[in-house]
Length: 141
Ligand SMILES: [Zn+2]
Ligand SMILES: [Zn+2]
Image (cartoon, rainbow, N blue to C red; front, side):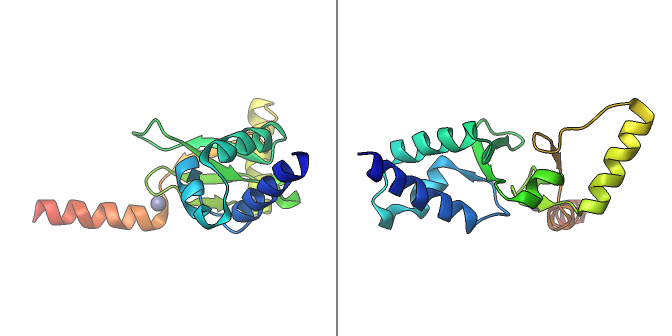
């Protein structure tokens, strides 16, 4: 039994490792793993376990109640900040120097020590900004 669970976890984890820049819902993940004989309930169970260990984190997108998961179990992901596009769900790994600078200035001005592991900055990615601008232009014309 334990070996079976471990195998499902390995499958899930390697799937997440293959999608480091996306936030995925449990349904997306289950769909991506249809060939791997891993049930949706096993996906949920293993995601919960990975979340508890700090290897994945939950994120949300604007306007939706669905929960998405983001894989952050790499050494470098622990020390920089992540940006999440609220429109398309893309994840950006902030340059470490930029993140350090931001955190330093936050600390200098607010005496606030930001926790990089738990922090996600929400916003709109460049592609979505362009798409949004095109849409607006189109509607005005
Ligand atoms: Zn990262
Ligand atoms: Zn986007």
